[in-house]
Length: 451
Image (cartoon, rainbow, N blue to C red; front, side):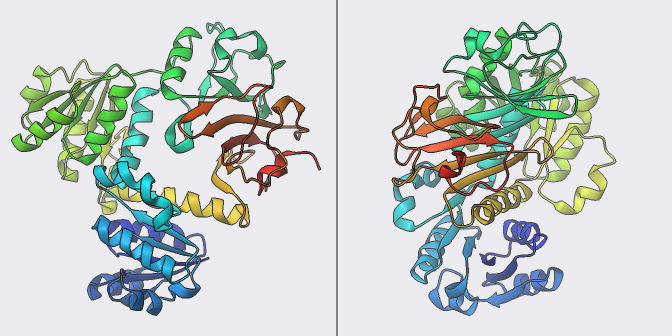
């Protein structure tokens, strides 16, 4: 694909590095000549010096024949305007980096008018990933669909679980709330159905809303290591987004922040969280706030060095699951030797998310695949389709559709409503439909039907 990236900062660089490894033709645009030179000399990309939010700079970068423009400057307004300008130049797909919580919350209202294919918020992306690790620390794998409204969670079923030895159809708590999708057993992967028996030692993937999944695992006696009390060190954007998600999931949240004004902002926005004004590097303060008894700790301060040092200290005084935010990729060679449990880089995550979206674009061959995950060592694919009005699957109960073998419709998203479908449910126009299958290369929702 021919891709233009506007912005040569850390995020733009991370995106370019991720995409160049998959053989795309990349051109970068930035008003800073040194940044363009650095990136074009470091990676095999073309460089254009100019304001990427102007038609001329985009034209100089070849946007008129590009498949995708990604706007990743430090300013949300510039990114949104660059995408709008790119669409006016005939670019079929645009992606904007949008960091502001206010813009992120309202973006769905103008996404179609702006012609945005996707928006990405690095801090929100990192918060989503961290929240999964903290909420279900014992999960083997977690992926999300329907804009994060449902999650696909893989867990290990042990002998003391009360779902071991049962047919899926016999598990009453599943109906309409939780759906078993795949079972990995003895090196083989199976697409589950009602007659499938879950056995001790199986790795089982289920789909559910996050809050429902937690209740199901508890009732099923499946250990997922759910955190109940989490301490966030630093009160920046990542902490804000993360606290919102953890509080919604019923997790107790305490935030320690050294800036008094920021503490006031967090307190007014996060009523259920405990906000502490203090220095996150103060070991006495951390002990007094219960760092040694917390289930999870996330070091999310502005300076990588502080996050690394305090994580190493907490590792020695607490059994908490520790997440460490590190922005500087040059630390990667050092970090591996420090024994830190989980390191997160929001810039790298952004590149990975965009690369995943582009892979879906390529695999869909111009069709309506919105999300694509490769699971179980690439033996299974989970795909999210948008139901077109012309689809042959519409307005027919799922039980009456002649679906392919080794395929399951696991979720239907209709507006704000999430449906874990049963036989009587139907797909309607514009639904977001998630399927899981062992068949490769499905490019349209109609491909779920037998030929």
